[in-house]
Length: 73
Image (cartoon, rainbow, N blue to C red; front, side, top):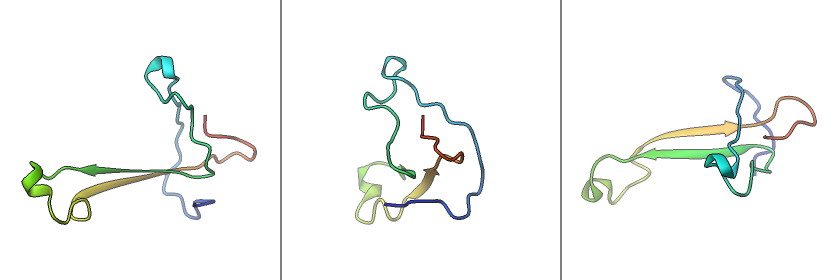
């Protein structure tokens, strides 16, 4: 588990949607750094194998609160 982002590339404001708004029922992530990876399909199933997802285009997102004592919310 990653504890901190040493060299962030950007800062932003994130609002986690409530379950009623279509968001996660479990609420915001609880890890110190939230990591999500999106993999973009390269075509149909035949084009995705055998090296997918390593061969696919990816977008990695890491989020960390920047104010001491703040939680992802």
